[in-house]
Image (cartoon, rainbow, N blue to C red; front, top):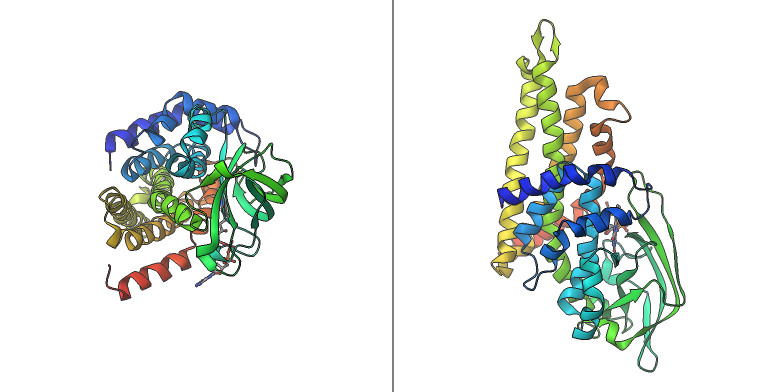
Length: 367
Ligand SMILES: Cc1cc2nc3c(=O)[nH]c(=O)nc-3n(C[C@H](O)[C@H](O)[C@H](O)COP(=O)(O)OP(=O)(O)OC[C@H]3O[C@@H](n4cnc5c(N)ncnc54)[C@H](O)[C@@H]3O)c2cc1C
């Protein structure tokens, strides 16, 4: 963990929060993305050496302490464009990366389909050769930043019936004929949507990595990002605990601050303990990534994501309990966090899938 970077990004969160809250719920906030770029965060992400997982976690944790909207806008731009940064041909990168870094092109990562979520390798969107390119047909669902994004790293099947080995990663742009989409209103106001691809022609230079090996591109991206979902969760957990601890020491009942009651203080102690352990797991997984420790990375990243996202849920729920009725006021930070904290237990691998990974890695002796 780079504590200075976490704190720098927490301060930046305060600068961005007003703009973050001014966006239309459920739609991409372009002014926010441009402001994040203006503060140099995308330059850190897409530097020549690419961001380290440790720095990525530190940035996400710091922003999440203050603004989940700014955090998510930052993260989704990264998720959508890191595959291009790492795998795009030089000409493509030269054409699009400066605008992605500058926040004027909005990116997204389109893997999930109506019939392929946890089992992403079951995706059925097809990409068939057509001259010097491919024709894409199919549907993507629950894609962050869709349908407003300008550019999608999108995964489609180039070889039928071949599981994860027959998938290719493409860059699909919003101006390509045959691409349309619509927002999916969610419980929390995330910009999430559906995409329909109807004979979309994608030129060959928009292929990322090797044909039929797109799943590697997806996994390379998720290996970098999975610990950082945990860091996002940590930031939310810390925000909730701060509110609860402050309330517990100032609210009196039965003639004493409620923090004097063991029934209250032990709940908060348990949350503090869970946050501390989640932080150790998150930065241990990030270090495994940055050290090139491929033996333990998958298991550690799964443990970090699972424990941190479940901890954040506990932290927010406990904080609401400690605040009593005040915790349920509609415009309160805790009510906002209560809605926000749910999704990270589902995306980038559900908690059940993380447990499957941990068990597999444990039985194979890697962790
Ligand atoms: C807010 C939000 C943003 C998202 N953004 C993106 C994005 O930008 N790009 C993208 O591609 N996708 C995105 N997603 C989709 C997300 O990645 C999927 O929702 C996730 O992978 C789970 O897939 P599913 O919803 O189809 O659930 P399913 O796979 O249908 O799972 C349903 C339930 O079954 C359980 N289950 C499934 N298989 C197993 C198993 N083998 N063992 C035990 N339990 C199992 C799951 O854990 C879950 O509880 C987003 C989702 C959300 C909620």
